Amino acid sequence: MGENAHSPISLLIVISVAFLMPILLQRLRWTMIPFVVAEILAGMIIGKSGFNIVQEDNWLSILSLLGLIFLMFLSGLEIDFDTFSQKKKEGGNPFAIASFAFLLIFGASYLVSLVLNGLGIIEQTFFMTLIISTISLGVVVPVLKERRLTETLLGQVILLIAVISDFMTMILLAVFISLRSQDSTKPLLLLALFAVTFVLYRIIRRVRKLSSFEQLSTGTVQIGTRGVFLLIILFVALAENMGAENIIGAFLAGVIVSMLGPRKQFVRQLDAFGYGFLIPIFFVMVGVKLDLWALIRDPKVYIFIPLLLAALYVSKVIPLLILKKWFNWRETIGAGMLLTSTLSLVIAAAALALEENLIVQSLHDGLILVAILSCFISPVAFNRLVPAKTADRTIRVGIVGLNTITMPVALEVQQAGFDVEVYTQRRQIKENKDVIENSQTFYNKFKAVHIVDDFSEDTLTEEGLFERDVLAFVSNDDDTNMRLARHAQELGKKTIIVRMENPTRHDEVQKNGFILFSTLFSASALLKAQIEAPNAIDLIARTEDAIQTIIMGNRYYHETQLKQLPFLGDALILRIYRNNDSIIPHGDTRLQLGDRLLVTGSLESLASLENELS
Image (cartoon, rainbow, N blue to C red; front, side, top):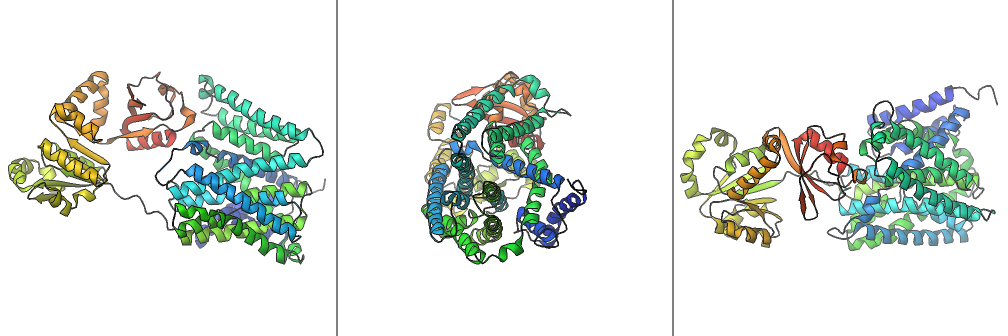
């Protein structure tokens, strides 16, 4: 061991570069360049390809390895298994579309690899198939979030293709390395590793529900964080002793944590540690060790680099033309371009292949260079082709009927941020003149009143009522309300509220799929609620509070008692709707996946609750 084996100077330079690169990109407004690409380029400048002021010592070697391990752990953690069970949405089933698209990509990658093998560029056809078919979640996810596309069908299909590719290529890589081994027991050991993964998942799932475990998860103990690092090291050790690679073990540890449905705040903490410290060191060191000068001295590189880059785009863009069935041409081509982004897994797989003597150093460096180039080209091309989703517009509400009920409601809903317009007949204005003049607040603040001669369909169409998102027909005439509601339904409107004072016609309203409102029904429901939960109405009535419905979609809280939720704040769960049942919640009530929670509280508390549960 040399004298400078533990010198902190090289580590200081690497960490300084990792710290300064995001600041530099922000100042120069080079936001199109992914941070990981910038870190590799910075490493090339300070490493063998540039000034060569950093040498890999023991510290950097260990921290870089830990960075790679943690990167693979977070790759497994990014796989959201809830998306695999998504129900069919309008336009298609995202999982079915993504699965079929990945099979096409994998088949095209194999054909392209056969061509490269025939040209003498590569020797390991199946390994190159895995390399070409990989997709970088670390590049795809930020681009989709920036364009506000994650909740659209296009965004979900792109994300699912990347997730399936990430999962399948990593598992197939482990199988490939195992089968290549001369030791016939290694494939069996790999199967045993997968079995251990399943068993540990079941055990951890039970343990984390213990009340003592929940208590140790806060404060200075942070038992969950300690457990994650124990799990990573355990699987790294198991993988290496079972003939697999450490990155496979780290990936499986991430898969286990993902299947447990961790809290989003906990995931953010892990991301902060990984991407804030260990992972940047790994990427910078990738650039440090990349010898560009030695690479360009190899004549084969001038053929290999363009061919492999072309192979990446051919194997993604052409198979994904199948998406034209659901999307337009720009979105289809854009999806293929973005999904050509390949970085983290290529770097990990290339390092593994070099260690296993599957590829030579020049091919290893060439693969990394091609991955970097793809991450330059793909996000820029996608952003050019696919426009960002516009920010969610304000919900437009149309209220038919001006009276003592609708005036205060219109004001409060408007103050909550909705675009509200009230429609009334000219004769009703005269009848309600005294009421309006007495309600000085309404008169001063609410000007969006449409005065019409009658409530006919043609008249209200001309006034633009039926272009609104939410329609409330709450005039004093039940027949008028039902007639206009049916017309709105024929136009495809979904959120329709109908005032019906005649109790015998309440079923008629609900059978038509409308939302029922009546003063008698509301008074009865209010009285019942005050009897069952006296404080609930006070919370709803407070002007600073809001009320909304939240869908329980986080499996981490499945079968969790309400009294064990640590983040309620001042939020109050009023009702739980489960299948066809309406449940009055108590402290011992257990949440289940798919529950619809009617909650009230401050906007901050509701946002926190929705962020954790949804």
